[in-house]
Image (cartoon, rainbow, N blue to C red; front, side, top):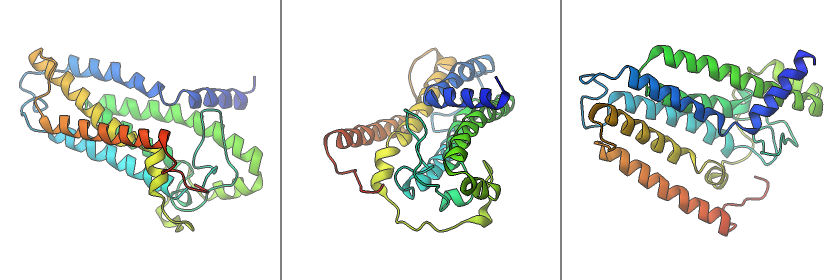
Length: 251
């Protein structure tokens, strides 16, 4: 099999399981924290939320913001959103976030997972994550672009020639021609905020266990944030499944 076809097949496979494979980050992250755990470390020194956790949450929220700005301005069935069944694109999205970078959703994903990797407090682990993320998503991006090239031909190659794949070119910004849709954001991205605070809480519980051998959390704010965002998530999930309130024509 030619390398170009092999890379595309790998990308399609990874795309199908993209929601689950990143969870493989957790076991090595937990091991790293256990291996380097110190009783008097600044990571464990306070019952308040630590600077490391604040930094991780801010970076995760920045990634979520990128996704929100991408989804909120994306029309239905564009290169901005794909499905579990495969690639879907009726038009090429070249405005908003897509005017600066070809894969803004994956840029957002990168920062969201980078924040989680930072919770380990280990530079070498963070750098390893960056390399693994690039190798992982490079194949997904390659498979998507092969699909788009076959479907849109020169129109896509011309746009992609002037638009970076992953590192945004801020000077290329073009204002979206459609309004921002909060309904689409709430429908498509309802789990992001909950996932961030739930994962940070899980990491904090693990850190507390390493220090005290107690499966508890000494930081109430993390519990409140995880519970409140969980309530919001399940309310939106109910609204999506039982009503048409979040549906919006053309979005």
